[in-house]
Image (cartoon, rainbow, N blue to C red; front, side, top):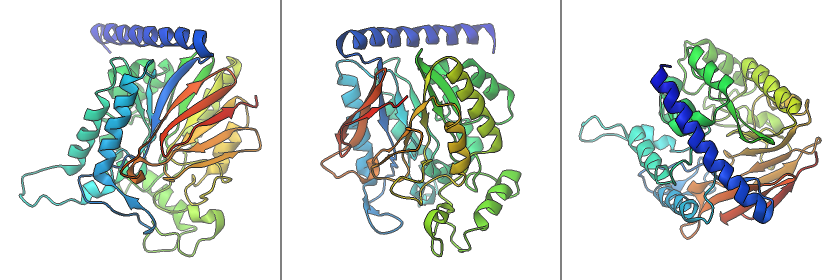
Length: 371
């Protein structure tokens, strides 16, 4: 990075930290809230008619999803105290965008158009409020990993979110040939927020000749013998997770996670985990969890600093507390919200809890920390 780039990044960092510090002071004096942030997931926007989901059990309202996002942004913009940042937990547009046909042969890219429509709504947030995006399976139905690394969804490509990233994560992104979609940042001295890449090992978005594809294909084929790897037919219990729309955390990412949580423990920070795909098998839908959830839980349980994990992907509310007292929470999907409702939340973080202030089909809930 040249001198001008460093100056710009430092200037943005100061502005973001100034906004956050003002909010921390205001919140602390009124209600012991250290900071607040917004959450929304599974928007899955597409300019197509409503239709049933893959299993024909729920309606998905693709066009209405953009209206829901618009309503969420308007709420955050008009709130008495704007959230410090927004967490978008993945599946920002729907995979059907990749299947749309340009009948006029005009070279339209429907996936890119859908992404731009959604990002345009996010751009209406108050100045200085960044959005941190998780990668979901639907991003990988529309784009390759390399395309996503160079898109506005990667935090290093956005001036506001880049300013939040821990310096080590920025350096890692700069040095590697590929930019990792896992990263961390400190929203408050007492907390560390950790973003995981649920599709680090996946058959989605990578070339079939790549080592990554072969590793993922071998992992899923040990269990899933179906021609359609989206289908769990013939799989029982937790083995139902070995489907195409899930993925795994690589050994490299696990090592990074371990080192990151070790540092958080040493600094006396509480860690909060975000990933598109849920981690804990005690949640209601055992089919939508990471292929190697056991490896991730082993790391999370090692340092006794993780207090909560937040996810999307399943499309409906799910909640459980694991053996180590960690809260595992799944947010409802925007794309399946009724026409007269919505699905987003503002999370108010305190020393001893996270208060979920839900809107639309998302209900209020308080997650009290056990450690």
